[in-house]
Length: 140
Image (cartoon, rainbow, N blue to C red; front, side, top):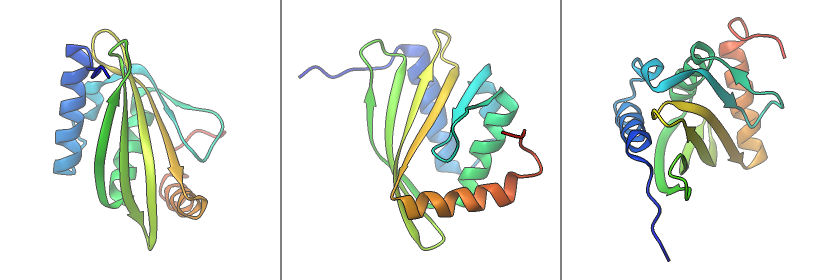
């Protein structure tokens, strides 16, 4: 079995992401995002687009999640995508999920997609995110 690694620029960005998450401070996140970055939520069909919107969503998620922890990380053969397995809590619901992050050649995040289970945890997360972001988000 071959171990896959990210391309250097993507790896550097992912390391910065991990450092920011560990510090619970995503204030520098916009520097990691492509202007055309997209966030794909497990709760809605259409992606949210644009670095400011993606940054707002991820900053809010970091506030909502409790006991957030990454466990495993995988890279794609082209070295431009990573899958990060995580656990967290929203209220009393335990979440298991993955972040699928795609980078461009410059190492900027161009796509951030989240998958979450179980459904009850996703519903709790969607309700909390909706309450916090309703006034800021574009209509879907």
